Length: 256
Ligand code: NDP
Image 1 (tube, rainbow, N blue to C red):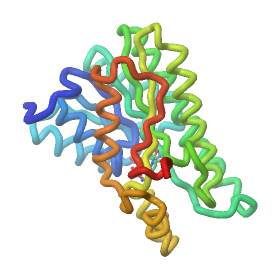
Image 2: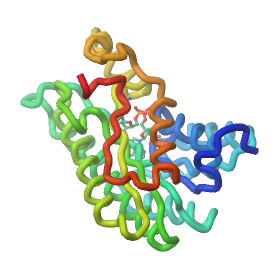
Image 3: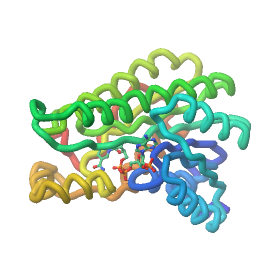
Image 4: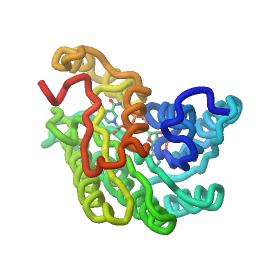
C-alpha cells in the first residue's frame, strides 16, 4: 500500500546502518516513496522491530543482519536482496561510526582502526557487492553517506574526517567507472543530524552542539528524515543525469 509519494516506486533498495538514526529514517522514507526495502545492520532486535513497523503499515520490508566490515556479510546481504526481489536497483551505504573526539596527537590506534575499518573498508565491501549485482541486472543507483567532514575539517575527529573524505573519493571513482553501464554513484554530506552518533558526541562534549549551531547558517540540528529525503531523490530516476556529486545536506554549514 503506497499512501503518498512514489519517487522510488517499484525500486528494490538496500540500506546499510538501518537499525537507527539516518538509516532507520531512510528505510521509512524510501518505503513511503514506493521502494521495497532491505534493512541491514548488526543489531537484529532493532532491525526486526523496524521491519515489523514498516510491514505493519503495508510496506514491503525485510532485514538482514550484516556487519559492513565483513566482505562475506555484504555479499550475503546483496544475495539475500537479489534472491528475494530478483535484482538490486538502489543502495544507500549509510553505516558508519563517529569515534572519539580527541586531538590527533592523542588519538589511539583503536579509534583509527575502528573508524577506518567501518567507514572506509565497510563502504568498499558494500560497493563491490552492490555494483556487481547492479551490473548483472543492467544498472542502478548508489548513494553513499559521507559527512560535512568529507568536505571540510571537523576539529578533533581526524580519522573520521579522513574516512569521510575517502567516501567522497570512492563515490567519484565509481561514478566515473560505471557511468556507461547505467550505474550512478553519488553521496550526501550531512551536517549535524539527530542520531546516536550525535547523542554520544554531544553528550560527552558539553557545548559542542551549541558551538556547531552557532556556525551553521540554519542554526539547528537536522532531523534524520531530512538527510533521507536527499538520498531518496539521488536514488530516484528523477536524478537520472546526476552522478559523481557530493550533496551537502547541512543547513548551509559548508557554504558559510
Ligand atoms: P547512528 O549511530 O544512529 O547509526 C549508525 C548506523 O550504522 C547504525 O544503524 C549501526 O547499526 C550501523 N553500523 C555501525 N557499524 C556497523 C557495522 N560494522 N556494520 C553494519 N552496520 C553498522 O548514527 P547516524 O544515523 O548519524 O549515522 C549514519 C551515517 O551518517 C554514518 O555514516 C555517519 O557517519 C553519517 N553522518 C552522520 C551525521 C550526524 O550528525 N548524525 C553527520 C554526517 C554524517 P548497528 O550498530 O546495529 O550495526
